[in-house]
Amino acid sequence: VLVAVAGLVGAARGATTVKVGGLIPLTLVDGTPLSGVEEMVTAFRLAAAFANESPGVLGGGADLIQLEPVVGDTHLDHDSAIDAATALHDQGARVLCGPALSSTAVGVSSLGVARRVPIISYSATTAALSDTFLAPFFARTMPSDLWQGHALA
Image (tube, rainbow, N blue to C red; front, side, top):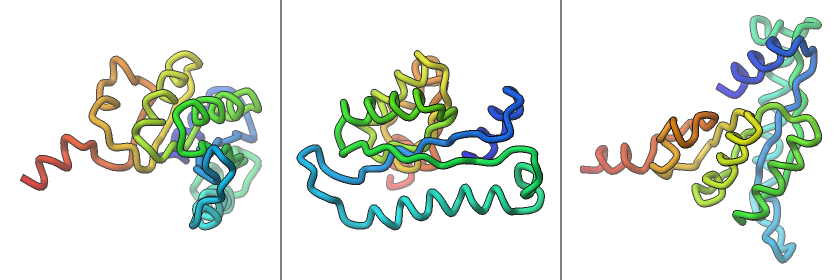
């Protein structure tokens, strides 16, 4: 999904390189490092490299569109996530991947509306983000809490 959106954004703007922002919790607000984040950053960067080098994806290494991953630290905090998303967009990111928490994704989705930037979360599940009128630039790869509740029932 992220690759498709980045490709569309790049194609629409005539870009050859599209910065993709990764909203990843690297540390807590007090600076305490979080475990497992190196793997998340590596996976994010590998996904972009795979898309850039694979035949049939964004031109398959040709001079069509290349993804440039950039990472912002959300600190698992609402305000920090909005700050990180704002900074990534100001640095040229045209698509944002994340954030991880539903509580931070709600605030970041408002930024998506204000700045018209697509946001794709890999784990935010709150049903509040399912309203396409309130969060038209938000998508997710996980089902919402509402759908998960139906599945459990």
